[in-house]
Image 1 (cartoon, one colour):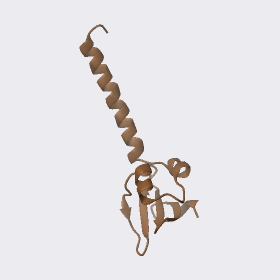
Image 2 (cartoon, rainbow, N blue to C red; image 1 turned 45 degrees about the horizontal axis):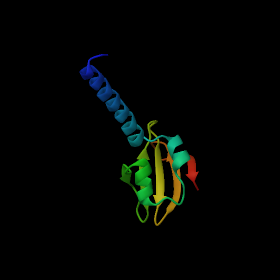
Image 3 (cartoon, rainbow, N blue to C red; image 1 turned 90 degrees about the vertical axis):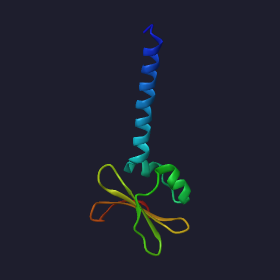
Image 4 (cartoon, rainbow, N blue to C red; image 1 turned 30 degrees about the vertical axis):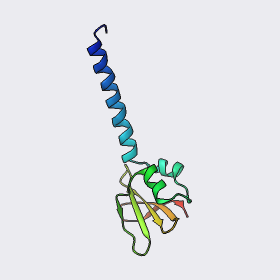
Amino acid sequence: MKNPAKLFFLFCLLISLYSCTEEKSIHEPTFESFKSLLHQDMTYSQLVKTFGEPARDIGSGIHIYVYPLQDDSEIWIGYSKSILYAYQVDRQGNKLATLIP
């Protein structure tokens, strides 16, 4: 590639593809990412920094932050002043796994 314009185009294309991959991993967390990165002493701002904004809050009395996963299950994080619990649940709300008891 002797043409600098072609080289520049290829560079921009690679940067664009890399950016799309990074965005996807941030916006579509997996069970494994919660299993390895979630810990009980995380603050709300640390949750958001690590996993993004929760899709919704279904709590009443305490916050229950909901994070949809790629496999159609969800992570529910019970939160007051700290994380009280974290579960993986199916579409009907049945507990599949406990991340934080």
